[in-house]
Amino acid sequence: MHIIRGINHLSPYHDGCVATIGNFDGLHLGHQSVFAHLKEKAKEYQLPATVISFDPLPHEFFPGDTPPRIYPQRDKMRLLKMLGINDFIRLKFNKEFSQIEAEDFVKNILLKQLNVRYLAVGDDFRFGKMRKGDFQLLKNIGKENGMEVQDTSTFKAAGERISSTRIRQALQAGDMNEANRLLGYPYSISGRVRHGDKLGRTIGFPTLNLKLPEIIALRTGIYAAKIRGLDDETYYGAASVGKRPTVNGTDMRLETYVFNFDQD
Image 1 (cartoon, helix red, strand yellow):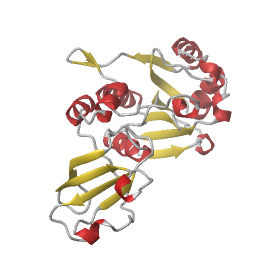
Image 2 (tube, rainbow, N blue to C red):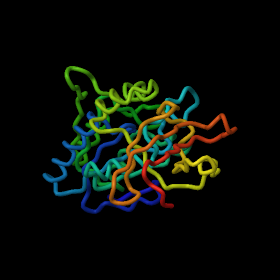
Image 3 (cartoon, one colour):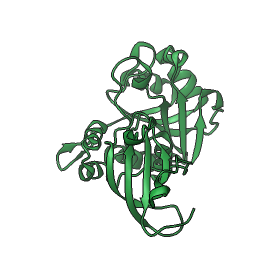
Image 4 (cartoon, helix red, strand yellow):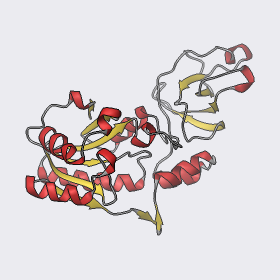
């Protein structure tokens, strides 16, 4: 999967792409349905399946109550690759970007720079300065410029609407079974092992330490865990999520003691 970070790193897609735009926090069953449809269109058009998102997410940039992320950015990219997306375009959302007029966003970024030939978005999608852009504007400009625009219907499983909000609530409650059911796969976090305070080894329980975002939906506490990536084996262990108040910790960490593993 190709990753393009920021509008300044965009080079014109001469042959074009098929794309979808959104926050995609969670990459749940509903998102997976959109991506499956996008990949079908990518085959039809013989163009790359492209996901366009933002960092920070728009609701994180503006003042107010910010819902915690389901996944760190690293895991969003890992899962997009796993789901068969060809290109991930990560647009930096800042004050300058928030002032782009809706029409300019469509004409200059989607059409001129990305040459989007097919676009799938929710019919409630809003964008551009003051959120003036909507699905109808996309349809109208697309029709004039050879970009097909299709709305994505709300995804339901067993009659229930699947949403990032419901997954976030399940994670905050520590209900992993419900979160996994809505995601369609087991929730997991990845990262590079970093040096900790080396306190665990002094009592015979050395841990793998991963840094977490300060605001993440996963409830603090102790979890049973499966660990992959140390070698070819799958290990089991006990994982702590939180700031470690008993040792005056300040940063969010995932610390995992791995059973039957004694290597560095």
